[in-house]
Length: 292
Image (cartoon, rainbow, N blue to C red; front, side):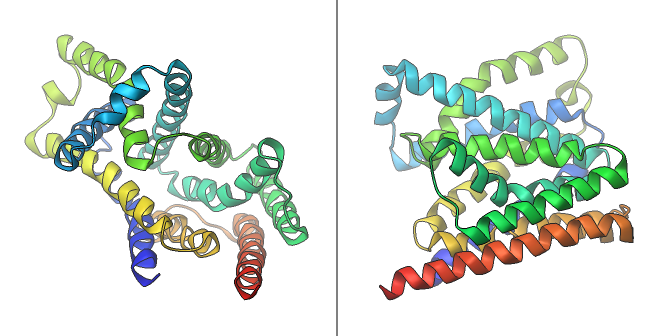
């Protein structure tokens, strides 16, 4: 239990500090950063698989078109999520990005109800309603939908839904996703380089180093998460996941000076209240099940 909490907390801390990493690549096009992230993640994952000698599943999956199609869709969702997130960091929208991951657990409740026929408890519905009120307030204050937060929550929510019913584990699944996207990523990087553009041609040693580091920084938190998730209850995991958006928001406000005025803060307060309701309900339900 204690080691599971440590692994999961480390994973969410990694993800929470990612804006500081992407800020180092602010001079590189966001889409190019994502393409590099795909390529170097695949290289790192292949090295891990070689070390573990876990190759059998590749041959089995290659003979299952439906599995390949499902992971191609999840790969596209993941790349869309990455692209919007990197763009948000590059354009001083870290706080809006953090909002997406604050509302993600509540989006998951809704997706579970619609697609998995799960029956949320009354307090969970209350949490969803309060969070929706927060999003409406933020929309009214800004005069537009908080599209960054909604796109991040929706893409990762659907991605999580697909992975929940997938046949592969975290390591194998991410490897297959990056493998399916690799031809596109390599092709785009080659195209930019052929035309004398992109970091591979114009970047200095430091830039190339940061891009290479994106591989392990993508894969390691996921492996930590997968390890921790097997050892702790879902309620505990659900509460720990707030480490990530909390760190993102703190970086955005305190380190990068993004605006967080009182009127806008009210929307966040409503969403945080929703998360408190959700967490209390999850802990109460977990303890009740263990006492049976």
